[in-house]
Length: 286
Image 1 (tube, rainbow, N blue to C red):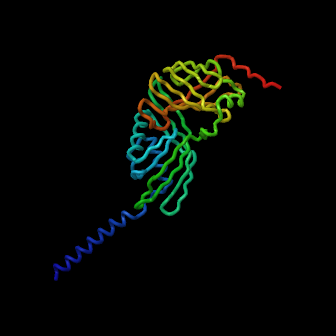
Image 2: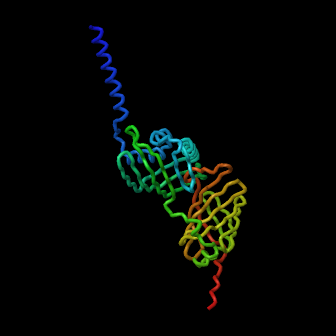
Image 3: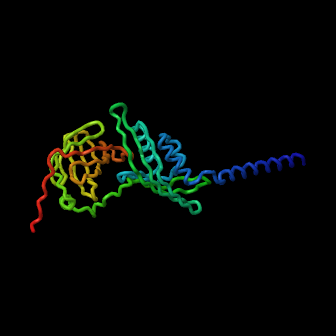
């Protein structure tokens, strides 16, 4: 009889342990969707891949979109891209300028604006860059923990849709600017020359480069560049002055050798200065 009582007591304790363990897995943590997002941004600044992994879902069909239309499927691709960025940048500092979060049950969604500050290189070769970004995404609460299950990131400046961009000639005429001539291009660590036609297409003297203008959006000059000398290519977006004598903005990579999934913010800023006189536009016949 005594042994039966002991056995029943042991069974009751065992059941209590199982119940407490089960409840521990179901109880909601103190994290909120907003605090998780803040932790993710802080981990990005601290190059803390472990914390990022803690707050990201590991679903094989997890999709993350980043700057320049880059797409990552599954945590492994995201982790690889983030580690490459951490290795490439000397310092990263990401600050949230606006965040809005909505929640319904175990699902939450957000919008967020932030400044992605990165420094690459050291000494005189350092390349500082600031990217104003806009993020949206979805979190899901699983077993009491909020996890990111979807993320989309883009530049705050709206991108042009290809089907809405008229020809470069029409855009140049519409803006009263002929881009023909010689330009001096100043990056953080080098200066070179570009020779363009009226449509904004031409060559430049660094790495056998070539510029192709896609179009304008207001005063924003948008296009692509290719450098066969070091097997790289990318895009640019610069703001052209009203008199057409100079422009400033940023450039970024879309491919480096065989790599096409380039980490966010991988690029730099530069200033264009026209060296030849601004061509005189021919007045339309009356």
